[in-house]
Amino acid sequence: MDLLERLVTLFAENGYAAVFIALLLCGAGAPLPEDITLVAGGVITGLGYGNVHIMFAVSMVGVLLGDAGMFLLGHHYGARILQWRVVARVLTPERYAKVQEKFERYGNRLMFIARFLPGMRTAVYITAGTTHRVSFLRFFLLDGFAALISVPIWVYLGYFGANNHEWLVMWIRRGQSSLWALGGIILVVVLVLWWRHRRRVAREAGRES
Image (cartoon, rainbow, N blue to C red; front, side, top):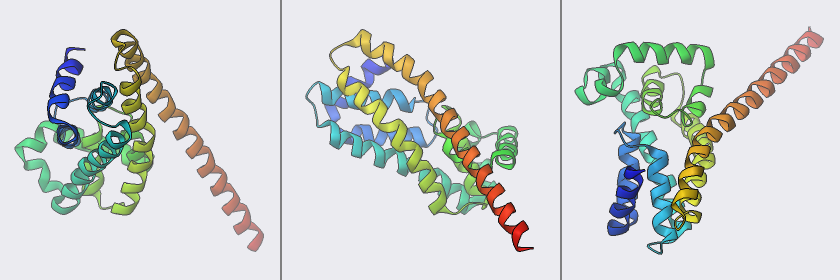
């Protein structure tokens, strides 16, 4: 966890602003793990360099702004954004086609799932914008709901484990696996509710006819 230690040092010296900027870079596809960045932000509050509740708020804003920025860039420039050298490193034409295929299969639910898929978030959010199949409000609500699950887990984990490095590393590893499982469970619940809603609508339409 050398990266975690380096981020803790950087954030302790520069405070909330450094965490905020780092999270914007995460949203832009920089090779910086968002979960480790959030944990580092929590750690410095546990060490007395800030307030954990303020750190949570700052982290939420940084995460959502970074994600929204990618969506809006895709929405404004469309597929032309794939020609940008910086974007092409994150979203190759092959990857773009693959994400589009997943949108066809999972629809808007993919935007919620993406938050729990490290390395896929930026590609999914840019693609969501380029497709013009979803409004910004829907995107923001889905992404915000997912962030309300993941962001506090990482920030408060860092806060409570600030003085116990071994315990913290253990729970980071467990947390990474648990978030995948949690995201899967929530997806299954959403699909079941959607399926039941469709059946109810179909039954009501059958009675009316």
